[in-house]
Length: 517
Ligand code: ARE
Ligand code: CA
Image (cartoon, rainbow, N blue to C red; front, top):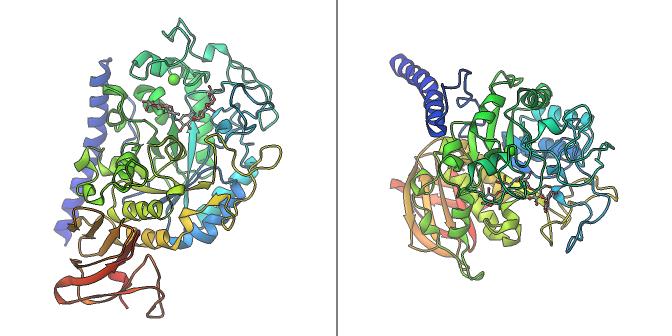
């Protein structure tokens, strides 16, 4: 016992030294630039571990996030919540040109104006209270951080500030932004080619004033902002447009960050869409933060659960080996999800309109255990620009999960049951994979839990090897064990681990060792 644990400790120590070094060497090699970064990299950051699930409550206001933490996320076993960009931002006062019909599109928040936290989601005091409440409920808070740019339009913010493209009172002026000609080589000053390194880093992303993140004073302002959030109890960040900041500037910024209130390095998940060559690829960013967003993973999930024409389905059997085995970054380097706010709209991913298929895909992600899984819950929309439910001034109104205006996937029993499953099975490996070559699959997580998923429109019955010992188990997707009784469907596992199970159409059946009745 003592021999085992000490050799584990030794291994962990080696890994802790070796991994970040490897990240830095690879990074500097690929950039072909000077000496290795002298500052300690943060790739070994403690973040949500393999057994931790995050909810992404996109554009929920702060008081609604707080009540979800207390009422749903904490009790269900979510370890973290990602909240929206909290800094003061553009508030539009008139419609744009052309087909623009939404005065306060959701994306106003991606145009920060100051690092004071008066936003569509609430006040700075409400933000701080939310972090406190969530932490008390056992849920750590991760913030969407926009560090690449400021605004691309407008002149007034939610906090009542006036600004112009290159002038942000007391924060930045023109000398803090990349300029066409001097820094940015494109004719328009915008990114015209997403495969061009200089353009991607130093030109304007969709017309957003691009910060000189290589400049010490700019890095200091950004670090001051992020450290303020850390001081409020925030545990990490989703870094927006990380591809456009670049590895060097990200590492330099992260090295200025304080430890969290728990004493950990902040968890940093980088937003890097796939498809770019070499240093612009998500793989090339795995050494520049704790993780990258699973933006290729959600495409694979969509393709397996739904392909085109729209009424066809892909095939769940294709998901055998999903993860590093299907070309994605290593599991501990990915923050994964079935969709986020971009991919639910751009066709890359499933979205809430896929109904039961979307729930099933979330169950697969939680059951399978690739990456740090995130469950996305947000508002319903008709057009891609739609505002979240708001008052006439654009301030987001309270989330109401019983109304059609909001989609609370995080609170669905079929999903919370799988959060518990995920936490229970921890890092146990996928075993006993079974598929019918089509849309019925099953696998166990070691001998800790078992799940079957059916993406067909009809129920299927088969005999499976569950990897669990004989007994009667409670299906976590339909119920819970309370006082020795299961409130949902039960499954009998025979000696040898075999079970005959009927998996309903577009549904899963799942249980862990702990769900025995
Ligand atoms: C809005 C208007 C624009 C206007 C601009 C400035 O829509 O017409 O020019 O304002 O006034 C979000 C919205 C944008 C919005 C922006 C600012 O999506 O529509 O612009 O907020 O309000 C690339 C980036 C990636 C980025 C995507 C959108 O690499 O980082 O484009 N994603 C993040 C967020 C977005 C957000 C921003 C960044 C900006 O998640 O929600 O924009 O903060 C290939 C490339 C990718 C490229 C992708 C685009 O895959 O390889 O690099 O992603 O195409 O689909
Ligand atoms: Ca940039």
